[in-house]
Each structure stands twice: as structure tokens, then as C-alpha cells.
Amino acid sequence: MEKFRQHSCQHPLIPLNDANNTFLMAAEIHEGAVLDMYTYCNKNDLSQVWAYLWNSWYHPDKWVLWARSASECISVLRTTMVVEGFWNHLKHTTLTSFNRPRIDLIVHLILTQVIPTVNLKLSYHMDRRRLGHPKSLAPWQYDFKKLWADYSKPDDVRRTAKEKIIISNTRKTKAWRQERLDWLQEEEEREAGTYNTSLHDWTCSCPSYLHSRFLICKHLIRLANMALGEAGIKRDLQFFYNLRRQ
Image (cartoon, rainbow, N blue to C red; front, side):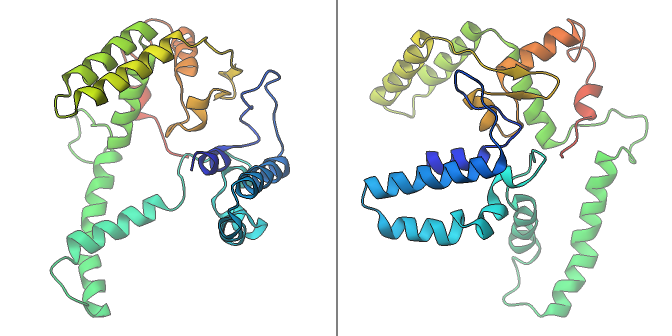
């Protein structure tokens, strides 16, 4: 699964985490992903798995449907999660009381319940309601702000906070907590890597950036804080209000 995730997130604008900070072309990413997955399946005698992966995922016609590298731009939104979220809400909220409803009933519910709710949310996000009142952040903007604040902290402070969360989690076994603490200790003792971080392109070669939901990492955030200065985003929330999904 980690290989699949790695192949999905690679992009020509994101450098590899190697000594030369190599940038690959889209075709090279696809070729390398196919070779990597084929080699793994061949080594572990997974011929049927490879047949499925090639026909459903790694064939050129399928690759462009899910791989980030198939697009010239780096998209933050992955797969069809926004559309799937809408249908999930429609099915489990609006249509939860109906069994196999007729199409005319569904259209009526969309017009009278779904669209007004969407318009109301848009009015809040576009600052068209409660004029003069502070504008609230969208849920994903809250998450982004929380991550930004976390990545801005020194490594020792972040590690201490993680230790407190693990130790205070009494619902887990003692062995589980000790295992997580050992992982943190190994992470602290691991030699720090050197990554190609570009504030101008907003890219970094570290693994955290490659798999990040918002395409951020501590290296980029700390560089951005230095560029913005001490009184930058800490003082003005307009920075987070102006964030937009691409």
C-alpha cells in the first residue's frame, strides 16, 4: 500500500528525496511506478495481483485517472472525494427516511432541502451574511491553521506534545504506549535529512510534503514564517481567510 501511495503522490514539480534532488518527467514517473510495482509482484509471486493492478490502475488509460503526475499542476483535491462527500450527505441525511424514492421526489428534495442548505453555507463562506461580524474559517481552513501552528513549533516541543498524548491515552495498553514512545525515540535519534525546499515553488523533497493533505511540511512552514516575519500570520487571520483550494 505504501508503494501505491508513493506512486499516486509523485509529480514532476516535486523533487525526489535523493542526493541529487532529481526531478522526473511525468512519463518517467509512470515508467518507474510500473517497474517498481511489477518487480515487487514478480519477487513475491503475485502474478494475479499484478494482472489486476495493470488492468485497473497502472495501464496508461487508467493511470491518468488517479495519478497526480498525470496533471501539469499539483492538485490538492484527490480523487472524487468532494463529489463522494456530497452523495454521502444526500443519501444519509436527505434520503435517509425514504426507501427507493422516485426520481421526482429526489428532485423535489434536492430543490427544497439540499440547494438551500448549500446556498446558506456559501453565503457564510463568501461573507454575504452577518455583515460586520467576524467571518469564520471553513473546517479545512481550521485544519490548515492547526497544522501551520504545529509545524511552526520547534521539534523538541512537538515531540514533548506527542509524548504527552501517548502517555495520557489510557484506553490503549501499556505495550502499545511503549511501542509509540520507542518510535518517537528512534525518530529523535535518526539523523536529520537534507531536503530541497523551495518557498518560491512551494515544494519540498521530504516525505512529509509528498503525502501531506495540504502540501505543507515543517521545512516550508518555517521558511515561510521567516519570510513573513514575527508579526505575520500570527497577528492577521486574513492569511487563512484568503486560502483557496486549487
